[in-house]
Length: 362
Image 1 (cartoon, rainbow, N blue to C red):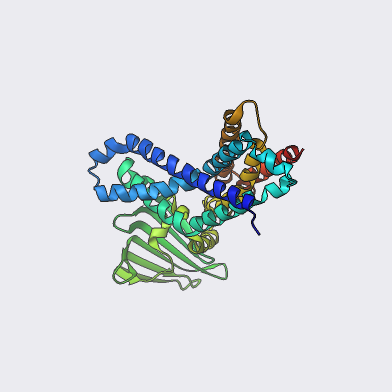
Image 2 (cartoon, rainbow, N blue to C red):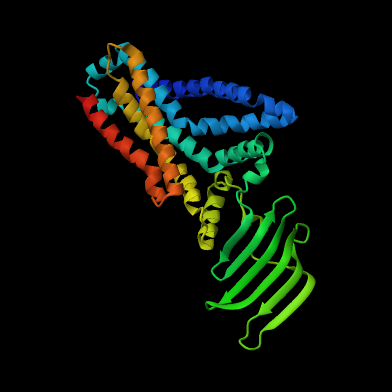
């Protein structure tokens, strides 16, 4: 059961975090507007799309810098409690430091659940709107860039199906120099080639031009030809070159399905997708670690007052974000296991939290 002190601290925890978000979100919007206003005017972007973009931007921005906002808010109000000698009074009443932490842990639990659910369902849609706007209107050749390299694309679409295209046009949904190979018991069963293949959205099938099918039968290979041939395949033509931020735009269920499909295909970007998945769990978990560090750092009354505690807090918060970005990038570009890379900052700062908590108890 929560006591009056628990309710008081929990209220301060949640309200300060909310105020911190409300203060920094407009600042982020103003900075973003100042950087992009010229391109928005130049490209004559409709006001409605700009407003939708900044709605998505706010969610994306808050989720991105959530650890910093949480850390600073806890540092702020805990330092204020310490400077007003409220923490001394609480501990002098016989309450242990561990018991004093309980409302903070409850607050961290509430925040982490909210962040977890948002990361599963809300943030992906915001990320899609945010990135689509940037690549469509604000980046030169953005539509081409967001698809990555559309030339010489080779994909394994299942255990026994392979496709290759020389190039892929995302606007017309057309691939050129198409090749499809079907294997049975590790032996080539047949191969289909076409000068180009186009997706038909109404019929939900493909049209192949200059179609050639070679069925392998030892000395009795069969060859079938046609100027045009319609057919259905198990792959999505657009999946040949998914947008570079595709994993960020998928909710939890679709992301797991997408990763399973990409793993089967032997995708070279699988680590990138796994980093996005593991971060959905690691970021909410960081709420507990950062809360304990913030309380341990700011619970002591210092000669430097709140300024010193805030300086320490800002340094630690940015160090956490730095570690998170560095190891996330290493997981995407190197052989470091994505799970270890994503959770490494939590492990390091978790050890730091235990050390600082022991000192604070003393």
